[in-house]
Each structure stands twice: as structure tokens, then as C-alpha cells.
Amino acid sequence: MSTPATAEALPASPPAASRLRPHAWWRRLAALGESTPASVGVVIVLAWVALALLAPLIAPYPPNANDMAALAHTTPSRAHWLGTDQLGRDLFSRILWGARPVLIIAPLAVLGAAALGSLLGLVGGYYGRWTDLVITRACDIVLSFPVIILYMIILAHVGSSAWNIVGVLTLTKAPIIARIVRGMTLDLREREYVAAAKMRGESALYIMLVEILPNARGPLVVDMCLRTGYNVIIIGSLGFLGIGLPPPDPDWGGMVKDTYGMMMVWPHMALFPCAAISSLVVGFNLLAVGLRELGLRD
Image 1 (cartoon, one colour):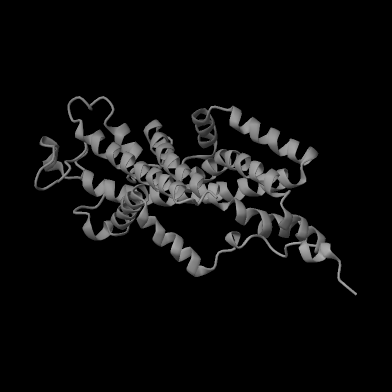
Image 2 (cartoon, rainbow, N blue to C red; image 1 turned 90 degrees about the vertical axis):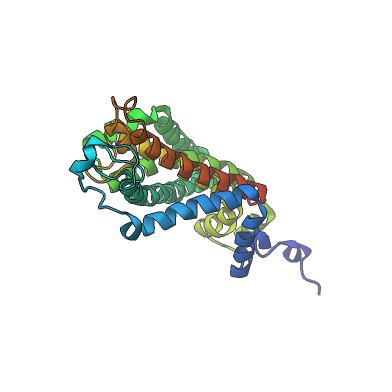
């Protein structure tokens, strides 16, 4: 007696590309060297990570130390390579220490938004109907608010701190990621390996997390790199508006805000923090471009 043909034809698992072994991940990471944008982006990001980690060793001064003798000459000098601010604090030291909160808050917020957004997108795209309608409308409501106004309203009520900024960025960026994941889920839920998982009796949670989400990782990884760069800009903007990290801790955006009204006299006080923000954003954007070139979107 022959077995039913349908049982033999059904795939038992998703495509092999969706379940990479550890050595396959290493090959993907090594392939970054084949893309010039990705290589440059990795170098820039890793350079800032190294500077942030080594800040206690290479910063010539404590970040909040005042050099009253430098107030008469704030421009770059042998004692202060990038000059000082209006309070006599060494700019080079403050930029190094200021990289730490940025490199912690921006990725953490992206990971939180990716987790929440992926969950919402998977549930809405997989179940459809009223579940999809409720999730989509909730995301539309959040996205309808001007983001800066929304940040100011929330942080004015809960207060400015690193964790509060992470929470605000997570809640406001999750709807965007939910839209991306929802769109891919609507397509992937019709694939043969999803139908096979349903016939095997797998739960909806298993299908969403094991069968669908791994196949949507490519565009999600690229978007996370881009969104980390956006978060760096937002963190700097919040600091410039006075609702970022509380002083006197070094904050790149806050350093620019402190020079407001003095930029024409001492432009270096704003130039160097702005250059730090720009370089880190460029690094993450180049990394995203390189990942897209390498075909990780497929």
C-alpha cells in the first residue's frame, strides 16, 4: 500500500535559509568585508564603541572637572585638544564619556521596539480580521502624533532619564516596525512550510516565532541598523531641547544646547559634538546599506 502523496509533498520545515547554523552566521559576518559601505560603517561604529569603553583610560580629564584657568582661552590647545566649554570642562573628555549613554540607549530602544513591533506585526498579520484592524489602528494613532511633541509631552510627565528615554523611543518606534513585520507576515503566512506546520498541529505561537519571523529577519535587521542611527539623532535632539539626559552628565545634544548664543564666538563648542553625532549616524547608515547590498534582505 502506498502512502498518500500529499503527506510526502508537504515540507517539514521552513527553507534552510531561515535557520542558519552558527558557522553560517560567521560566514555572513565575514561577508561584511566584501562591501565597502558595510566595512566603513563597522569601522566607525566599532571605533566609537572602543572609545566609549576606554573613556576612563584615555580621557585626559574627568567629564565634569572645571579648569578655571582655561576659561580665558577655551579654543583647542595642547592642554585641551578640542578646547573647553563655557564652564572650563574639557570637550574631548566629555565627548568620550557622552558616547556611552548614546551607545547604550539607542540600541536598547531599537531592540525594545523590534521586540514589541515584531510581536504586534506577527499577531496582526497572522490572525487578520479584527485583530489586525485593532493593532493597525492603534499604530496609526501613535504615528499620527508629531514625534518631538510626543517626546516632550511624555518626558515632561515622567521625567528625563536614560530608562525613560529608552521607553519613549520603544513605544514610538514599535508601530513602524509592526507595519514592516505585518506586511511580511501577510505574505509568509501563505507559504507551503506554514501550511505544513499547521497540518502538523503546531501552535500559532510556534508558527509565528519559528516559521515566519526567521524568514522576515533580513529587512528587519536592515531597518534596525537605520533606526539605531535615527535614535542617535533623536537622543541628540532631546538633549538640545533640554529634555535629554539630566545634567551634569555629558550629553552630546546637551553640549550643543549649552553653547546656544555663543556659537558665533566659540563655534568649536558645538562643532565637535555635532561631528560626533553625525559620524555615528553615518556609521550605522553605511552598515545598513552594506547589509542591503549583501542580500540580507532576502
